[in-house]
Amino acid sequence: MSVAPRPPIPQLIPESAPFSAEQRTWLNGFFAGLVSLEGSVTPLSSAESAALMPALPGAAAEDDDEAPWHDQTISINDRMKLAEGRPLRRRMMAAMAQQDCGQCGYNCQDYSNAIFARKEERLNLCVPGGKETARMLKELYRDLEMPGAAPLAEKTTPAPPAKLGYSRDNPVVATLAQRHRLNKDGSQKETWHIELDLAGTELAYEVGDSLGIYPINDPGLVDAVIAALGAPPDFPIGGRTLRETLSDGVSLSPAPDILFQLISFLTGGDRRKTAKAIASGQDPDGDAASLDVLAALQKFDGIRPDPEAFVEALDPLQPRVYSISSSPKMNAGRVSLTVDAVRYEITKRIRLGVASTFLAGRIEPGERVRVYVQKAQHFALPADPNKPIIMIGPGTGIAPFRAFLQERLATNAPGPNWLYFGHQRSDYDFFYEEELKAMRKSGHLTRLTLAWSRDGDEKIYVQNRMRDDGRDLWVWLERGAHIYVCGDALRMAKDVERALIDVVAEHGKGSPEDAARYVAELKKNDRYQVDVY
Image (cartoon, rainbow, N blue to C red; front, top):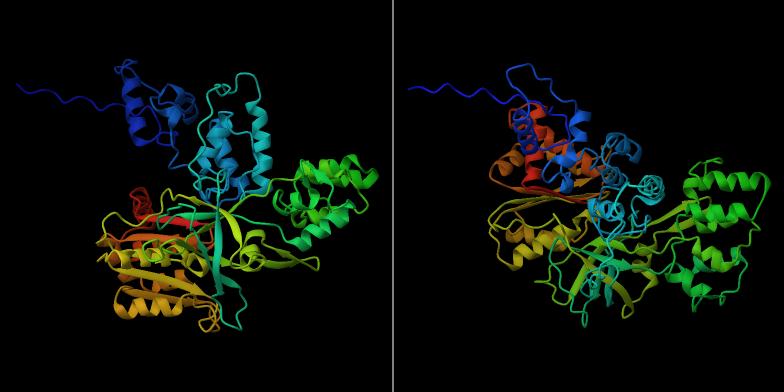
């Protein structure tokens, strides 16, 4: 006796609804059991299906791996538009800088979840997001304060502190062992190889991890702020002096909104209007983005806030996180970093990257610095040492790949290694040149592809070299290669991804849409990993 085939379950949940394929299948089946399938059934709209999210098993813990805003190149305004209609905690996530850099002590999703659950009250921890993220979180937090918006966090026994040296809140003290400049004389850049001695810290790290650094503000800047404030350097602030507090306790760039609120209370007329406007995120004079703490005091010259109130109006000095550029198997007891010293001029004053110039010159070998290991979440060598790896790291993006190469060398991993490195000029900016050429000569570095943007009339970048090597790249991918990208989030990383999609489309004989899906599948399977900043 033949059995009539069962009719297909109607697709009541549209593909645009904010559910995974498995969740849509479950919901379609669930609603098919609730309605009569003999009559006509109207599929739910995206808004209607989204409203049902709390009823979906596991929906409350949805990880949003495919969140459209989880892209470092999308502006915060565009991310917030993409997140419209999403639950509040997801809109909070969209406000993050989307780098998962760990500088806040979380990844973007966990930080937003902690704020939503009212377990984290600090809204200004997102270093790369800066004032834009802090302002948006403050605005969203108002919704959280509405009655019934979210349950208050249960009062529980505080969790024990994280293991010493593995949390921004529990750093250890390391010693600067040595540093040397990686650029040769004549370079327009200033990049340093930094080595820290971990003796006595019991810190352990793996390749792919990062190191958090607690810097100290430039003493010249501290002195200038104290002078503009018109206060004695030894003014007592919470058991410390004003100078000590400004040196390592608070950020001196950029000037936070609350500082302009404080200034608005101390002045009047047009200056008060200007201060209030800047505090609310406006830019009445077109200079708001350039105002660090000193520039803010100079803009409102003559304002003399109480030093204690002034300090309370500043943000805490945040740690900075750098990709580790060494393998513990090759560099036991030490950890290396590759750091660009940031210096730039605004309104005839040289501004300094607080951590980069601290490491590059304000600390001397033998002196100590507070550090912690930031464990990598999705940036690690393949478990199978036979797998080929393709590493794309221009500039300081080479850092984790130097570590990868050292690790694969120390463990005799047989998998082939291909490195793309680029910078401005081959004669001056070829970082770790002797080391890489030795690896290339020995065969450990299977391929070394270089791109120099200032060597000729045509600017050549790593993404140009990728397109040139498209056929070979495709062969490596089909052999199971893992791809890694490290460096600038806003331009380079996106350009590299576009180049990879072009390579897949051309040599994989598929459409651009097929190529984009192929690359998305690489990401899903952890074969395309990024470490960006």
